[in-house]
Length: 260
Image 1 (cartoon, rainbow, N blue to C red):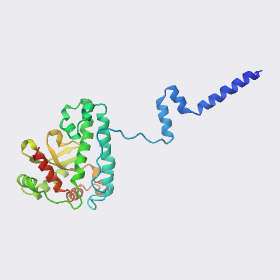
Image 2 (image 1 turned 90 degrees about the horizontal axis):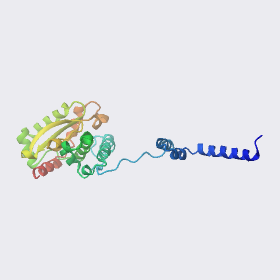
Image 3 (image 1 turned 120 degrees about the horizontal axis):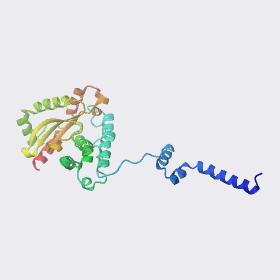
């Protein structure tokens, strides 16, 4: 027969085990099982971890999301900026984390020096840095009631290179339509060749900066840029995009490129 002392000891041990089983966070922590601790935290409805921080930040849209209606719709602009562009910024910060020599560079300089980027992060910088730079150029290129034609030195250069602005627009739109899958069409200039203009395309998020050229304006033909409004009708999107390109801004970029 169990003595009174043995009975009390058994009750105490049983109570202690019950208390331990009801505190899985403490148990897993003391046992060194970090994943269990994280899983328990997630199951309890804890907030997901904050987006990674770093030297790169998401620039705000320079206008309300519906400012480009009816040409470009508010829902697409919101998702395009707040989700897609933000993801490029966050992933670029992840790529350069712990690399102070890269963290101190602008995204443009990262892309200009892409061949010198360490091999283990070069693809991430190319893709995520390109996505950040390309979209950062895109948003201020667009404007409600935009000036519909270039001016100054850019107007002269377009006439010289493409015969006329309408000739340029036809070739630019054709380039946008020619991109297979996801990518961009660009008007670029080459400061090494007296500001020589060119229309070019790039796949994915590749930037003309990596080839030493200056992007003046680019049209994003990834489906996320237009599918909610235009579905598979890319030609309609390309035509609508042309109506909101602000050629005052593009002309200023060309002037800045010529000046160095």
